[in-house]
Image (cartoon, rainbow, N blue to C red):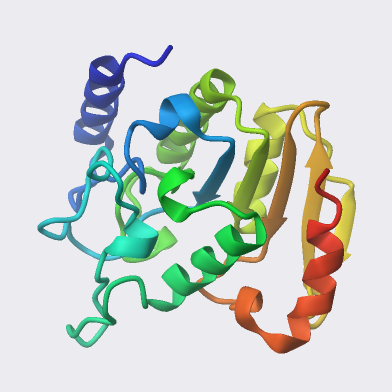
Length: 218
C-alpha cells in the first residue's frame, strides 16, 4: 500500500533540491487510482512554465481528470476549452480505444518537474533518476495490467524497470515511425511517438496501423 503523505513529502523534498522553479505535478487523476487502476498512461513531463491556479499538483479532485476536465492554456495566453487541448484530445482517444474513462486511469508523467521544454530542465539526469525510481515503486504497488506510454523514450524506460521486452515494433501510419508492444507476463505495455507532436490517435491514416498495435493487447 502506498503511503500518500510520505510520497507527497518525498516528491516535494526532491523538487526543492532539484534546482527547478516552475512547479511539479504527479497525478493527472485522483489518488484513488493508486488502489483501483487497471490502466496507466504515462507521459514525459508536465508542460508550461508555471503552476496554474486550480490545476492539481499531487493529484486531481475526486472524479476529475486533467485530460478531460482542465482548460489548458495556449501559447498566446488564451485557452482551448475544457478537455480540448490537442494532447487532451489524443489521450481521450487512447482511453476510448482502451475502453476506460480518463478519470479511472493512473495518469502522470515520468518526469515530475514542470518545464517549458526538455532542455530547460535543471539536472535532467537527476530528474530522470528520481522519476524513474518513483514510477517503478508506484507501478509495482498498483500493478496496472496495461501501461500506455506517451513517447518512445518514456516507454523504453518504463519497460526497463518492469522487465518488459520492447522488441515488437509496429508502424503507426506516420512515415517510418513505430510504436512498441511488450509484456512481462501479467503486464502489457504500448508506447507511441509523443502525442503532443504526432497526433496519431485521431489521424485517419493511422487508424489501421493503430488497430494492429492495439490488437496485440489480450
